[in-house]
Amino acid sequence: TRFGLNMSAFDKVILWLPNLNIQKQIVKVLDAVQQEIYLMKQIAEKYKEQKRGMMQKLLTGKWRV
Image 1 (cartoon, one colour):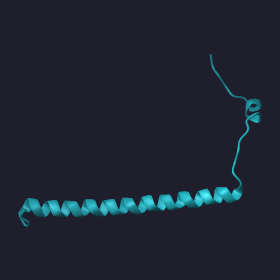
Image 2 (cartoon, one colour; image 1 turned 30 degrees about the vertical axis):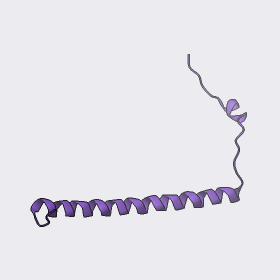
Image 3 (cartoon, one colour; image 1 turned 135 degrees about the vertical axis):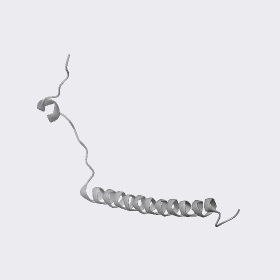
Image 4 (spheres, one colour; image 1 turned 120 degrees about the vertical axis):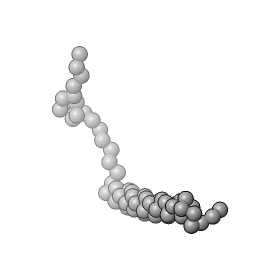
């Protein structure tokens, strides 16, 4: 059997949405978190690049441990 939703079923759905001010606050928080994730990814990439350079110096013998 197949189960389907028709428009009359959607008409009965109650959907709660926060007021516009709360929605704007949520957007600000999510934007800030997204920006922080972006910056942390950039920092992680810089550390990976630094690690590659250090490993190359160790393996070529320029640095001794």
